[in-house]
Image (cartoon, rainbow, N blue to C red; front, side, top):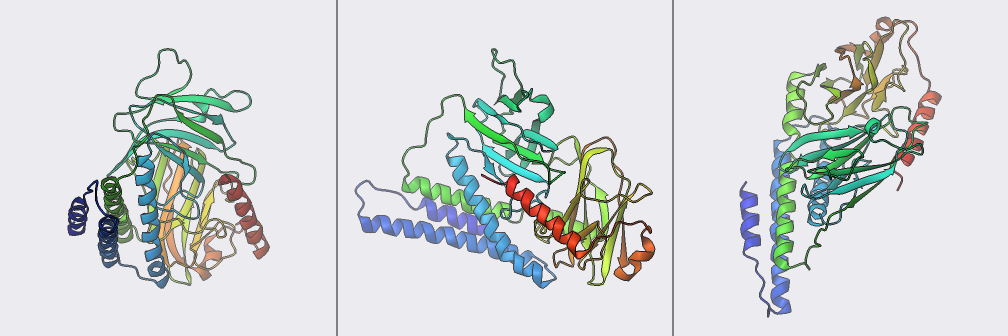
Length: 410
C-alpha cells in the first residue's frame, strides 16, 4: 500500500492559492500527474510480479488487461462525480471485460444516489431474460433486489415505467424497485439465447428529484479524483486474482457448482472450473440439461476475461447446442476444431476458466468433465453426435457477428 500512501501525500501537498502564477499552477499539475502515474506504475508492476502465466498468449494479454482495468477505473470515478446526471452506459463488449463477463448478456449500468428517486422507462425487446437490479459496487460488491420483465407491467407495445428509490411514492401504483441505503449502482442485464431472432430493449433513465450539479473544477478536486482513480485501479485490477488462482489450483479439468454466490441474480445457478489441456487434448463435458429458461457455458482466459465469442466459438448456450439422442448434452473444449458441433474454442489458450449459468432454473444438474485425447473422442461420443463442417462454423460466426451488432448498437 506504499504507492497509495505516496499518492495521497503527493496530492495532499498540492494546494491552490488564489493569486498563484501560471508557472506555479503548471508545477502543481505536473506534480499531480507524476504522482498519479507513479502510483499506477507501482500498482501495475505489483500485479504483474504476482502473476503466474504459463503460456505466451496469457503473458501477451497481461498489459492489455491492466489498460482495460485502468480505463474502467477512470470511467467509474468520473461517472460517480457526475451523479447528478444518471446515464445508462453499456458494460462489457469487445473491451472492458472483467469478472468473466457473460457472452449472452448486454450489461448496462448507471451510478445512482440511494437517496434519489428515479424513473426507468422504455420499450422491452425480445431477450430471454431482462433483469433490473440495485447493487453496491464500491470497495466490494453486493447485490440487492431485482425485478424482471414479467413484473414490469409492460403494455402491448412493450413500453413500461419503473420507479426506483428508497421508498415507494404514495401516489405510484406501478412497478417499483426498492433501493438500499448502500445502493450506488443500477444494473440492467439482458440475456440473449436465440441470437438470430432476438433484439435488445430501449431504456431511458431519469432522476425525478432535484440533484445539484458539481461546481467548477479545482486543482484540489482534480487531485482527489485522480487519487480515487489510482486507488480504484489498485483495488480492481487484482480483484479476481484470488478466484482465478483457487480455480487453477483446485479445479484443474473439473467443474463445481457455486454455492451462496452473491455476484449475480438469485434465480440463477452458477458453476465454474478450469481447463488445462495440451494441443492434442480435449476436455469432454457431459450433463443432463437443466430445467431452465436457458443455460450457457463459456471460457475465460487467465485474467478472467471472456475468450472470443463473436468471431470465435468461446461460448455456447441452450439454443445453439445440439442434444444427443439419449437426452444428454456433450460439449468439447479443445484448442483444435474436433469437427463436433458443440465445440468450445479456447482461442489459442491451453488453460483458462470455465463458467456455466443455469438461468431461471428449477434443477441444478452437475456436469462431469473428462480429459481425453482428441483422437479418443470418436469412441467416447454417441454415433449420432452432431458434427460441423468449416462452412457450418463460418455460418455460426456470421450469426454471432450480426447479433452483437444489434445487441450493442447505439
